Length: 55
Image (cartoon, rainbow, N blue to C red; front, side):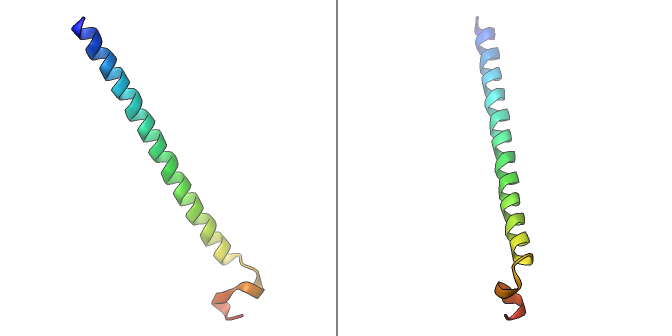
């Protein structure tokens, strides 16, 4: 009976570790996606509001 509990605990731990890994991956992907969107917006700004060119 003790062995069964140990196996269940290991499965539960494995489940939550995989879940945390997936959530962390999604968070990193989202952060880099937001950063890429900001950079894209900077370089595709309309000519009138492009501060880098001094207009």
